[in-house]
Amino acid sequence: MNSISLKAYAKINLGLDVLGTLPDGYHEVKMVMQSISLYDKVNIKKNDSGTINVKTNLSYLPVNGDNLVYKAAYIMKEKYNIQDGFDIDLFKFIPVAAGMAGGSTDAAAVFKGINIMYNLNATEEELKKLGVTIGADIPYCIMGGTALACGIGEKLTRLPGCPKCYFVIGKPYVNVSTKYVYENLVLDESTVHPDTDAIIDAISHANVAGIADNLCNVLETVTVAKYPQIGEIKKVMIEKGALNSLMSGSGPTVFGIFTDYEKAKECNDYLRKSRLVKSAYVAEPVSARMCKGR
Image (cartoon, rainbow, N blue to C red; front, side, top):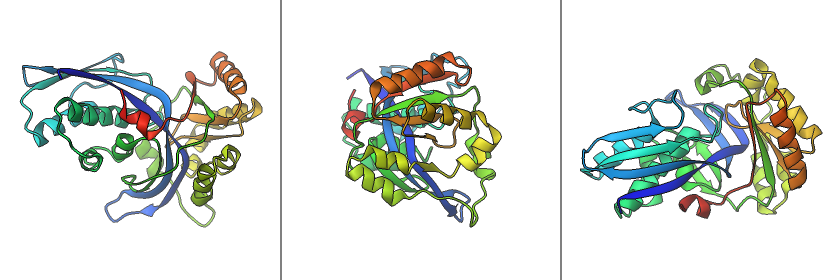
């Protein structure tokens, strides 16, 4: 196989809890992760030069060793002694610096794609171990679907699939530094933590309303305070029929959860015409099986 093309699906957090700081300085988290149908396209082609060449449709993204896609290809070359090089075309549709694991899911696609191209038969667990060396979200993105993520995000437990629903995704005109958010996070007795067990129970019983009732992200205390437009988007989504709304990851992307497609579309159209968001999409949950496919 000389080339392969894969979809790299975005993620949202149905629950994001921070339990504390680990001895190495990383934060210990407990998150319910969900893949959604918004995706980037990653095309990988062998070359004879032995070099890794990355191209992207966004001119401001790095295409060298600072790009996670490049790092993933380099790791696979070194690990499996691959002499070929790779020409990688990355078509970005997932908003950048948005709390949706866009860079991580692209890297995950490279790990999976090269594994398939060379029939390396690396297991999912082996790929996860390689992925976590360059990004805490990459193991989840390799796995995909619905999952509980603990530790720094690398300890994963597969959950039953998310029930049928619709997510309206709104990305405001700001980018957020994950480093800034965690550095300014204060955890004390007043911190409201997600009821992660309640979210998992609602997923297990295909209870969309139960999921919506328990949406919670402790990082909102930092990001919404700095960027109040996030709170405004959440308010609009609920006014337009969302069962609830939440910021994903460290932000600034906001999602609303809907059971009615027409209401979701109406909310999406309203946001697109407003000045609140740079981009908006209607998406659906994606299963782990879909995340493995092309």
